[in-house]
Each structure stands twice: as C-alpha cells, then as structure tokens.
Image (cartoon, rainbow over all chains, first blue to last red; front, side):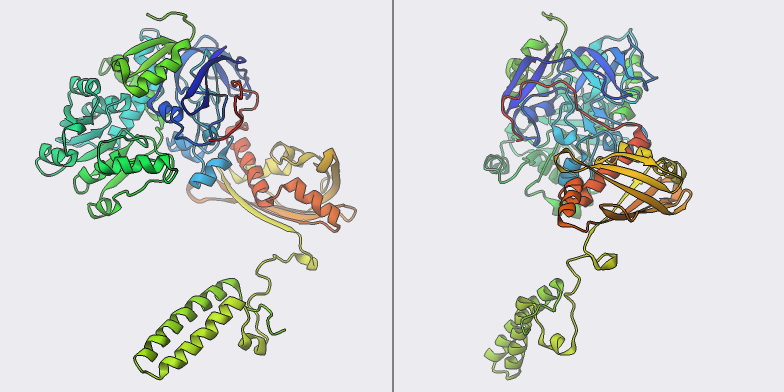
Length: 394
Length: 243
C-alpha cells in the first residue's frame, strides 16, 4: 500500500510499504477512505516531538471501511463504515472506566518510555512517536486499529466522509477544550490560535452557551473563518494583545482562555523570539508564548483550557499570576471516545457541519505538499483532507 | 582504622552542611570580637571533616556505626543475592488474579525470561528459563504457602542451580478500585557464573524486568492481550535514529 512516511525533520515522503495485518485478537484493519493532516502533525514535521524513527507512518485523523477483524472483536464486522479516534484505549482499565480514554493504562507498548519522561504512561496514539506506542498511522491506504471493539464509531451512510471525519480528533478536541471552560450564561471565552482546533473550539463554545468568543491569530483567512463562526477578531500583529483583551472584556478579563496553539507558538512579542532562540539552541523544548498570554489575560478565578500540544519543559510560565488569580488549568490529550457519539448526534441534528474547515482536497501522493502548505499557510490553507484510494481528487 | 567510614551518607551531608554554616557563623562572631566565635568555628570545622571523611571519632569510640548495611540489602543466609520488590494495581478481583497466577504454566505468558513452567504435583513444579548464548536453565520449585485469593509463596528445591524464593500477594483496594499485586523475589546464585546467568536473565535492572512482567500481567488481565507493534508496516529506515 501507499503511506506517508516520516524520515527526518522536514522530510516526509510517500512510499510503498507492506499492507497491515491483524496482530492481536481485538484488532481490525480499515481501508481508509478519508484522512486528514492535523496541526499536531506539523510538530512532527518540524521535529519537536522526541522518539520519532525514520520509517514511521504518520496520520491520526482517518476513517474508512472495515476489511478484516480479529477473532475476539465481536463488535465490528467486515463492511462497517467507521471513524477511528486518534487515541487507542483498552476500554477496561481504571482510566477507561472513568472516561479518561487518553490515559488508558494498557494501550502503549512503549509505556516504559513515557514513564521515564512523564512519570506514568498515557494511551497509545496513532502515528505520533514511539513514546506513545509507535503505532503506524492513517495517512495510508490501510491501517491496523488495535482495540477496535472500543474506539471506532460506526457512522450512518446518510452523512458524507467530510461531515464525520473530524470526529476522529479536531471536533472532539475543540469541544473538550470548550467543555473544560465550564461555560456559564454570559461568559466570554478568548481563544488563542484559529487553526482547525481553534475553529472547532469557537463553534463548540457557542454550542455550549458562550455569550462571546474572542479569536486571536494573525492569519487573515483564519481570522475571517473565526468571524464567520460568530467570533470577534483580534489580530495579534495589531498591538498589545493583553491590553486589547482587557479592553474588549470591560477591564475584567475573559472568563476562560483556550490555548489552541501549543508548543510552537510564534507570536511577535519579545518572549516569543527568546523562546525560538532557546529552542533552536536546545535550551528549551517548547515555546509557550500563547500560554503565557492566556494566563495573563484570564480573569481572576477563571479557567485556562489547553488543547494545544505540549511535550516537554516550559520556560517562564507566569505561575505567580496563575496562583494569585486562583486560576484553574484543564488540559490533556482528548478523551475522544467520550465525545464521538454525542457529537455525531450534533452533526446528525444539523447543529454543526465540521467540514466547513476544509480548504484543500488532495490525493495521498501529494501529502508532502499538503504538509508544507498547511504549515506555511500558503494558498490560504487551513485544513487538508486526502483520499488514499483515489488518484485524482476534485 | 582511624579513617573507617562509620557515618551514613545522608548524615554525612547534613554534617558537612551544618558544619559549614556553623563555621561561617563562628567566623562572623570572631569578627565582631566575640570569643565564642572561635569555639563555634572549630566545632563547625570538625563537622565538615566528619561529613567529608565519613568518619566520626565519637562514633568510633562508642562503637556506633550508621553506615553499615546502607548499600547492600542483606538476604537470609548471609548472602548477597538479587532482591526485587514491585507492585501493580490491576482492575480485576483478587480471586481472578490469584486463579491465573496459581496456574503456574501460564506464567511465561507475561514473564518474559521464562520458557515454560510445568506442574509436577500439587506443590512442586519445573521451571525452564532463557540463559546467555541460547542456553536454558532449569530448576524445580515448590509452593511453600498459599491462601486462596490472597497469597502464594514459593522457593526452589535443593537440587536447583539457582536458589530463589518469592511471594505474590493480592490485596483488594477500597471502593472497587481493583487489586494491589505485590511481588517479592530473591535470587541467590551460589557461583559467579550463575550469578551472571541470573543477571543476564533479569537484565541489568531486575526491578525494571519485574516491573515489565507485572505490566504484562496487568495488560493480560485487563485488556486480554498485550499491546504490540511487532509486525506492523513501516517505511524505509533511511537513517536509524531517534530524534
């Protein structure tokens, strides 16, 4: 089959690799009909995530048709059309029982690696480094799905691939980010980063009853898409973000702030440049300038919700501000399985159509171009979807 | 024997740091023309010496020693074996976990160094494990004590190359939070060569090896299978490296 293979920083290629096979009794094999590039894939492209190996197959937002099932998998059958969540979970451990699916105890074959870095291992993830299991990802024609009796969600034929594909990651991720804000009537939510997750968070905040959403970015088409979703635009190139957020919230500050940027923030402030220099010199791993602003901007007693990915050590986090203002922090990899079914309901009822975020449709062969367009924001690119079994995509 | 170490490590650090503080304070007092400063400075210096050398003349005189036995875990019979203790909490009942573990022939499913275990009679069993250079080591063991759903202890029989003893206990956690599984193992290899075999068998870090065994036990008991990526597709390994 064809698959997108990571070789080194800024080096991803399409290669022919062996087809996947059932390895465990609860596995399934999925023939992939649609797959997307996620913002967090860019952290892999840019070499920010440790324990990648040359030859790793990327991709964790995919769906398709079940073509084979393991002997213990009684839930799926050949022919089922499913969306696959990016987290891999056993469904039976302490954490799965508490809906903390991305904290599953039993799905990471390299748990010892994660334990060394994080104290305890979290769940396996598709195509996201060996510390999270080294599972081959879904930017390919086929994928092996472990514990496939837990994760994959069957979807009705009445909905198109593009309407349901993002149940695999960005819609639940944006939704959990908004849910973590404990939104009350009249609340204002400020969101740093208007990429695909930020866009989903904006819509989810409104679905959950937010009065107002302030969308912060500097890419014009992303800000426009945020405004289309009902948010107020704040371009961080136009001056002091903190002052502007303060003014826009009547001097009180947003009730909750969402950092949908993560470890590769690239603001225009002094600390952002210092972070960049330090990361380049291996003096720090993550560049948390969006997080710093979110903490600073948040109102007293407010919530900072973090769907943006962090992997290592953060410099100069204004912890004093967080402490003195009594902030609450909520974060983590999305517990996708908790949200897939209710959000499918939202899509079926017409509350939202997540395909609004797609700007580019490509054949899998052009995935390396897709990565570059997405990262460099060229051709007004916001979200790339690929059809691995089609030579040409409209 | 004036220089013998008879002060424990932690105590040595405390001595050295306390002594430094005392000396500094004494010197400051001297500058302020206080005669007591000299006494404090001298006492502080003695503490620094005690910390740096690990030798305390007072301890030596009284026969006191806090350094003894701090580095080696002593095992029964005056030997220095390999001692390991590990714990894991499994989301299953103590009875279910006990029942699986008690079927000794199933142990190789999660204990990676074992090739097979066969029950010879209700108490005795034969164990086969991997040793260096593809060799196998074999030994017989017997169950010393068992309490259904709670405890199993065992030891090797007299004819064994490797003397070992162990126990596993199963203790229910409150509020249905699973069962705490606690394993203690002691290997007591008599000869240097066999000591090497045991070290190889258990890896450089026996505790880590047992921890991985217990992780696999938990995965089998909870998920019913061991997560793996062995045999999945991958691209060309253009450069073999971790970033």
